[in-house]
Length: 112
Image 1 (tube, rainbow, N blue to C red):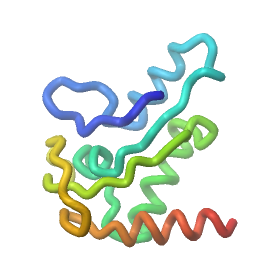
Image 2 (image 1 turned 60 degrees about the vertical axis):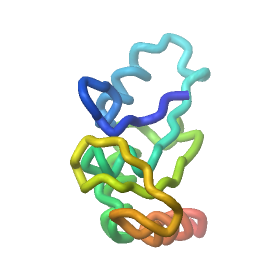
Image 3 (image 1 turned 90 degrees about the horizontal axis):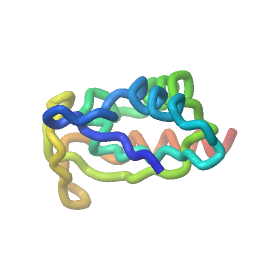
């Protein structure tokens, strides 16, 4: 399981392209999965502040990594500013974006 990072310091994995490159380097891809941490994604510059922004972010994820590798979501609130590359989780009900955008997008996808 590969989880995206916020990109703090010299960390790799904060861009979807990084995750795709890691997957590309694995011989047995049946053993690979990706978990998206929403706090990390927001801090890395993937906008989650509205349903439309979530749709754009997840479209990028599908195009770059592929939904076939998505095994989990780690819905977290973010204390850090958008695109700050600082990994600071926040308490439920707090944070820099409302979870509603992510929740609405998930609900829409489930209905498809």
